[in-house]
Image 1: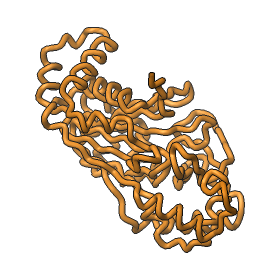
Image 2: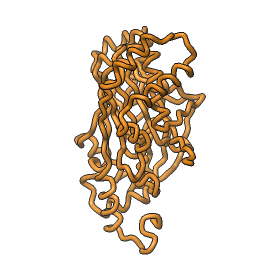
Image 3: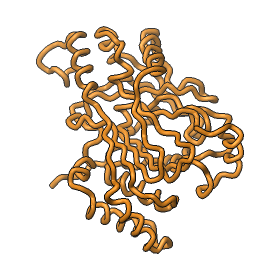
Image 4: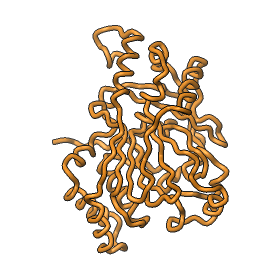
Length: 329
């Protein structure tokens, strides 16, 4: 842990105190774009929807920069960095029109402005989230009907996924994304347990959303001066591959099971499951999850067989990837 205290040999108690202090400051910020939503809706209604997507996106980004309040623009560069202590931002009332193309335009524009480099793997379809075939048979799947357990995305990949962003086109089920902070799920850990977390390793595996099995062994806790503490945790249990996170030791099993148990009752934040909302989280600062969809199982089964972007009851767009860096001249 030389990055933390280069001048001294850190003790378990000092490490735990520093970890607890740092994660206690992490927060979610909620913004209301009510003052711009009418302008975005009017712009969309007056636009040629057949115009090239990249041209429409450029016009929308210009509209955003021309109308957003200064303090909101300042937050675009803040998510997931050690100095900001902002681990998630939820924006509501960006637009009111239920249009899949407008929602996608807003999603791609805001994801770009928040520095998300969206990664599209050839073995995974990740962009559109709605009830897909066999939805009722699976939990822990973004396009399924069942509960999704707290996790961070793509920990099995070699590339670190810094951000996850979600935009809601519609959600008649009113099923929010949940956001779990380490300060809440580690509240019962004593200083020795917090200290031991830094040496715990686990093997992470891909699940149903990926067509091939990918595995990676890594630490569950890391630190850097740029990002502060980052957690690599995935408590999903896939129907096919089983546990997505397998501890490499008995000590690891004990500590990770303790976190799993605490997640069942600990406090969490929620996104706003309404048309025109945008939710971005620092993928290694918080865990995200979803309860079973607020829809009866018969309706979910029917929608999964006939769903399209125009009639599905819940349609979200998703991006995930590393932070895009810019040269500041």
